[in-house]
Picture 1 (tube, rainbow, N blue to C red):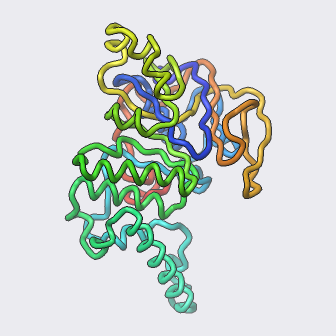
Picture 2 (picture 1 turned 90 degrees about the vertical axis):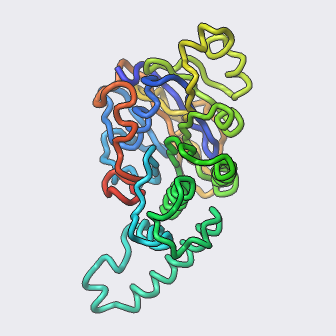
Picture 3 (picture 1 turned 180 degrees about the horizontal axis):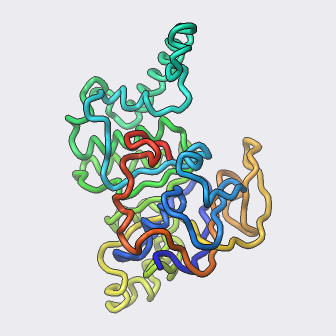
Length: 316
């Protein structure tokens, strides 16, 4: 069983991450949240609404966006064009609008261009806006991936190994952008990453997973002292040297839900006594087992870009 008997919640506007060895169930958990895999039992709630069982594109439109371990940029389009393609429902997608309402199409394209330029300034790729995406370095492609997800304005962002293949200088910038997304723009972030220093210095909470089950959760300083994690050599051997970071989610029967409202009046599903009062909330309950994907790293590279339903767009 890839994920088994696990109940977790994700606090809004935080960075949370799981750690654990290969086959711990971390990527499977991502796949369950984003709709690439279906759970055999239990429930996943986001903003008070149950989302398990929905197709990936529906989950994307709920405000959940994810990246994959391998970037899938549109290589023969410029960096700017890669961003402008992301927002759904554009007027130019209708042939009728291009004939009868060309002014509407042009006006929206101007708005999208300004938004894309603003995002590129945020990730310091503005000088490369006219460069073909395929010519970027591995680290720059990771920044482009992050920028594309920002164009979708997600409430919840699932990042799968964003630091893979990134040089130390770019990695520091990438981590800074991730923090700013959470603390300045209010995005809740779920992060899987090999670099344990990055995990412990970036995440607000850490979840320890092994064989599809949660062993411990808490702030990084608490997890460091937990005997199940690193208190002895045997525990470290059980978890492995490659640890990941994830945010608080779960996979089966969620308990009773209370109600909360954030500052913008959005109704949120919140487990009783759960985390911060304001923000977007994700909760997953625990039950017996979760299937639908082979256990371990089988879905780690299963996506074809930032979006399951469109191979090259971050939609889902």
